[in-house]
Image 1 (spheres, rainbow, N blue to C red):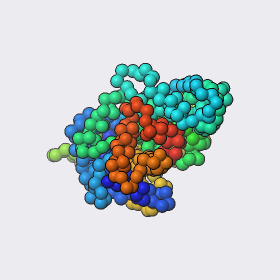
Image 2 (spheres, rainbow, N blue to C red):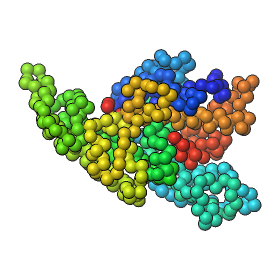
Image 3 (cartoon, helix red, strand yellow):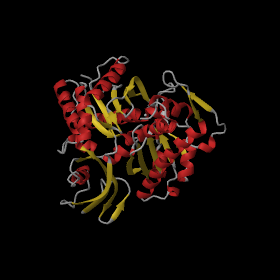
Image 4 (spheres, one colour):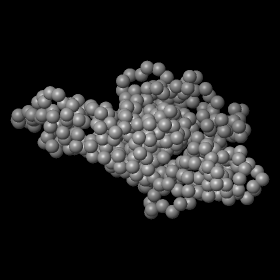
Length: 451
């Protein structure tokens, strides 16, 4: 078994998207950059709007992607970090209160754990489960605390929490697919959080920024402010609906509509300076189809505007004035590659906008495909997986769990970790003390052509 203190611990992440499945294997080098050693990318089959609808097809896609990545690395792939998304994702704000019994002692991590664990007792709609509990601010004896309250003295500790929920069946289906592919899930992470880890800077998260991940089935929105996730939402529209609009509006095949969108599409009709006629091969025995580039842009523009209206609503619903979010909007996902969409975002929201690409986190120059916004989620899952491994190693060494001379002890520690990384586990254990420090977890740097 691989030891925890091995210098280059290989980690594998799997992004199960609406249009593609990506398996990515890599590690962090001595410069704290991500070295990618193997990538497998295949078309996704059996996923609609981020949700598994056909387990056997998804298992096949996962197995194929992992097999491709496996060819580039020496060790077998067994454990993976996986993302979850879809329009079933919801978020809510809740305030927790803890009255401490021992008022003479300092506030410790166990007090914070108790407050966080209490959030898992919330009554949710039938079929929902809590995916993430993210602390916002703490209050100790009516004094607001910026940062962790550990080490302070106080009787009454309160905190505001951002709680992300999803359907139990959606999470179970992802687990089942990965298990049927012969793999073990270390942790399931909300995909927008993973994308943020790949493309956002610490300065942007502190200043206030809106991450918009335009995927194939959905558009994920995450708002950071003062370094903390303040709002998450899923817009049930993505690249596929744009493709379908082109198909219906131009009366062409869906495959041709996707090619048109990628190669000739534009999010702003007024930016099309030359109204060229695009020829699309007709059906057998029929004349080629003639399509105006301006008309194509008008079809795309209408749907992009609808998505951005949803975005504006989510920013307002989160209680933010766009002018307060200095970092503006960061676009990622395959949809971010649509021509003129950055300018469209700036027109619709009044906020500055940039393209979010994951190249800054990579060890050295990679090809254009690897640094594309399409790969943001997969790379983010890999980054969070590596950071999770590092935190476990530090914690295990501190607690004396790792013993290089006793493989059984190490194996037992690894087994404990796998159980506690499962978001559905409610029991309090040594790994919860590590991972329930959710604030640190999410504040650090924590697709189709569309996700």
